Length: 116
Image (cartoon, rainbow, N blue to C red; front, side):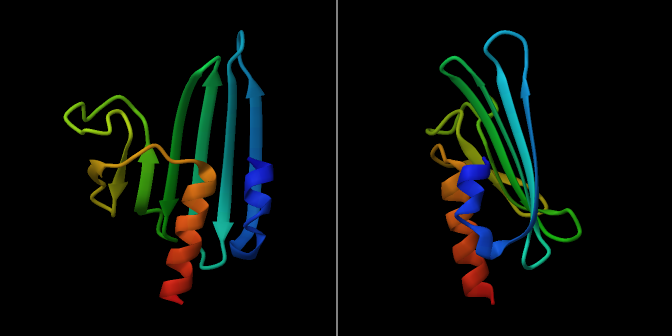
């Protein structure tokens, strides 16, 4: 995560990282980024062999969801199952392809550029 986020230093005010080696082959990485506009991105990635779980939640200063991307196994009706994203404080879910932390940070960079 540190390697990915270092490419986006221009939008990151502060960063905190945590990595844990759980039982067996499981590796869990977390980071919390405070961005230049005061919003936050909380990222979670868990790998066990070829199994990969993720959640990237972008929140405003009031901790309300702006977007959250994840692959939790709900919404089986979506054609992108299990991949999806949630939008806004109401966290309305919609189908969405798998994303990486890099792609999320690119999206946020674009959003910050157009809102500023």
